[in-house]
Amino acid sequence: MRRIVRDVLLPVMVAIVLAFIIQALIAKPYEIPTDSMVPTIQPNDRVIANRVVYRFRSIERGDIIVFSPPPSAVATCAPEKGVPFVKRVIGLPGDVVTVEDGVTRVNGKVYTVPGEVTPEYSMTFPAVPKGDLLVLGDNRPNSCDSHQWVNSPPDPAVDPFVPQKNVIGEAEIIYWPLGRISFLN
Image 1 (cartoon, helix red, strand yellow):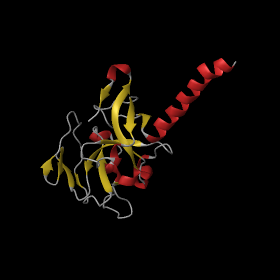
Image 2 (cartoon, rainbow, N blue to C red):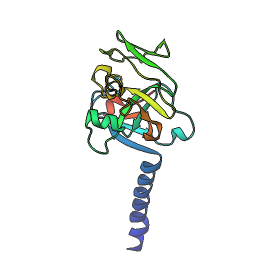
Image 3 (cartoon, rainbow, N blue to C red):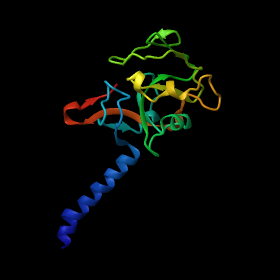
Image 4 (cartoon, rainbow, N blue to C red):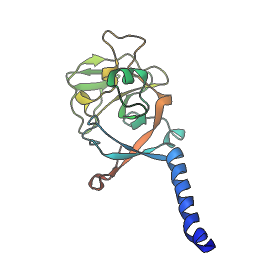
């Protein structure tokens, strides 16, 4: 009996504890339920988010982030409680983002993502405040993102930004389905 505990049960328990620690502190899997990031991430793809990367470097334009939705997103999109969002960072603090005639510009310069679906809306976002991010899905017309979270006319109480403190991590790997295994970014 002692041998079974030492050779089987103890290693299994250590593996389970390590899996929980890794998921809580380092990397966590998420299922993507919508088409907001098509073609980069397909509906029902599963990704792994790196939860420690932003302790070593700043969030960069183009990063695909996993984050807790801000109140404006919750009011607009009505997500399931506790379900995080996955979007691409387009605007960093101080940036002015505009979308016009299907073209996204950051501080006046064209910003494109390979394969992005052309937006069907035009708008100029307010400058991104310090400590916030502006995020858009790669499937721009069909993504509940910053372009839907802003009111017309803009209401200062409802803004289109994601507080950086809401960022859980960077989506780095598609791990399921097996035929789509790949690194993101």
